[in-house]
Every structure is written in structure tokens, then in C-alpha cells.
Image (cartoon, rainbow, N blue to C red; front, side):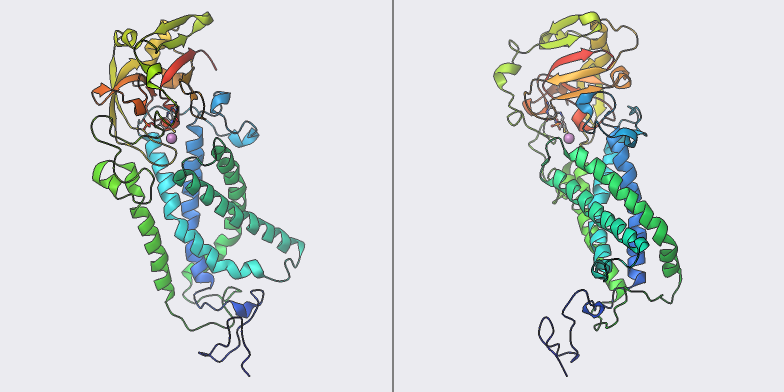
Length: 424
Ligand SMILES: Nc1nc2c(c(=O)[nH]1)N[C@H]1C(S)=C(S)[C@@H](COP(=O)(O)O)O[C@H]1N2
Ligand SMILES: [Mo]
């Protein structure tokens, strides 16, 4: 007899449909099974490993262990074991690392969703735990799934909604990454031998993912993989352009810093926060009003106008802006005063020390940043006054902004008002 299922009778097969997702026969897609789950799992194993490494590297680039102003995770303890002094060479290092991190993360979204879909019946396994070992395994799966969703969601929101978690994105994403990776490693170690067997054998092992009562297939497993891969390709193609200029950037339809450049001319490249947004008024940046305060050894202090800075030796450097959000510009041609020359003005003639840079901006997480001694010492690290042959535009930090090779955008403070040299 045909009983009514959850969605009424099932006329095609004249078979009852299970009402409850807790019943194995509720899950009927013939695509589910160890092979599909294993293929997706192996792709994620490689991809997430790269995401984790580039994420940790990106975090180190912030100099979190240099000074409290850079440190969003003061309680990280041993999780900061790997932190190192971020180099200044090659000058595109952060651009490459963060481009990979964000582009790959977005590209993997369909694979992650497909993987979760492929194992979703297991969320409904009853009884919830058969033994202590089974209970532990299920808790680790909860951390794995929850951690993965948390990391992808916080990452995407940070990019799309422009720092929606003011100041706390780094904290959430950093600790989330460690919780997730612990569960991920346990999962990979436990499942890899089986995944490998599933992929090598032509005949598929049966497991609980194979539906006991499969529906008629509407697409082959290969077709399903093409569908997932196509989704990934589409996301890749509409994101990757934000790492380049001109026509390529226009292809980045999904990226907030894709599409057209904001204006044309020397300052017509991507802007993170405009002067208006940062509350910088023209009256405080003009020649009369603006002074740079530089403080150094034993409180030695100088106050410099823009004219004073222009009288110092000026140097050029071709460097990109590369933001944690994954967008970057090609090399721009900056011109200004070397940071180490400013250090020398206030008593550091030999090896320069670290520096704390503060902006005119009164509020906001990025109004201050600390640079490490190796960054100050690099001859391409500038307090820039010009970009691409003209005065900085207000939005790019007029009258003066920091530009340091290989550093994340956030360390390139705009509208600089004060620099304090000394060991931090
Ligand atoms: N004072 C100040 N400086 C700042 C910021 C800011 O919000 N305020 N944003 C930083 C970030 S996150 C980036 S990516 C770069 C962007 O520089 P651009 O707007 O010139 O491209 O500026 C950095 N300097
Ligand atoms: Mo940024």
C-alpha cells in the first residue's frame, strides 16, 4: 500500500517516502557515497592546508608580537609560537600570499558546500552516540563543520561588508582557525586511509552514506563534480581580477574592490577608506595647519611641515597596496622621504629602531600601526608625499602616508601626523 510521505505520495516509484531525516531511507540521492565524499575530501585536504598556512603567514605579517597596537589577540599564548619578523623582500610577498588566501578561500566554497551535502545524513544519525569513542568522533565533527562554516563566513563577511567586525575580525578568524584546524587534522588522519582506498578502487565500498533506497539518478557523479567545479570556476573567475588593474579588475564582479578603478589619473587606483570616511578635513591637512611630529632618542622631537619634508632627500619606490581583504594594486610609483632618514633626524644614525605611526584620524582601528626595525631600515620604506608623479590625493593619505615593501595594506598608515621611533 502506498502511504503519503512528507511531500505526499511518491507516484513515480509508488513507494513511501520516509517522513523523518533520522530515517536512513529519507536520504535518497544516488550520488551520495564514499567515492564522491572522498574526492571532495581530498580536494579540501589540499585546499584547506594552503588556506591555513597562508592565513597564519598573513597574520605574522601584521607584526602582532611587536606592539599592542598591532595585536588583536593578546591572549594567544603558544598559538603565536611561529610568529617571525616579516621580511620586506620580495616586495610583492603579502600581495601574493593574501591573493592566494582569499581567492582560494572563495573558490573552495562550492566544494565545501558539496562536501557537507554529501555527508549530511550523518548529522541525523541515531542514536546520537553509541559509545564514548563515537561521542568524541561526533563532537569533533561538530567542531569540524562548525569551524569550517565559521571560517568561511567570517572571511567572506569581512571582505564583502568591509570589516563588519570592527577590530575583532582578526581575533575571530584567528582563534576560529585553530579550533577548526585541530578538528580538521584529526578528521584527515582518521579518514585519509579510507578516502585513499575509495579513490583507488574502482569498485566502491559500501558505507552508511550510500542510500538504502536510492532515487533514480538525474545526473551522474561525474556530472555532479562538473557542477561543483563549474561553481568554483565561476567564483574564481569573478574574484581573481581584484588582484590586478585595468580590464582584469573589471572581471571581478563579486569583489568589492573589483569593477572599475575609482577615477582616473595618478591617484585613480583602489582606495580602502576615503578621507571623508576617516573624518579628515582639508583644513587640517593644508600647508599652514599640518605638521609631522617625529620623536626619537631621549625624547628628541622635531616638527616638520610638508615644505620641510620636500627639502629632505627624496627617493622613489615602486610598491603595491595589498589589503587583507585580498585585493591589491600593481606597483605604484611612490616618492617621499626614507623612514630611516627620519629616524636619523631624531638621533638614530646607525641601525634604526621600530616606529609607532599615528594618523590624523581620530577614530578607527587603523589609525595607528607599528613597524619593525627591519621595515624602517629598508631603503624602499617611505613616508610618501607623491604617488605616480603627483601629490598624494586626499583619499590616498595627503599630506603624507607610509609605504613599506611586502607589508599588508593596514601597516601603510595614511594622513600621518606623528612618528615615534624607539624599541617597541
Ligand atoms: N589612517 C588610516 N590609514 C590607513 C587605513 C585607514 O583606515 N586609516 N586603511 C589601511 C588599509 S586597511 C589599507 S588596505 C590601505 C589602503 O590604502 P589606499 O586607500 O591608499 O589604497 O591603507 C591603510 N592605511
Ligand atoms: Mo586593508
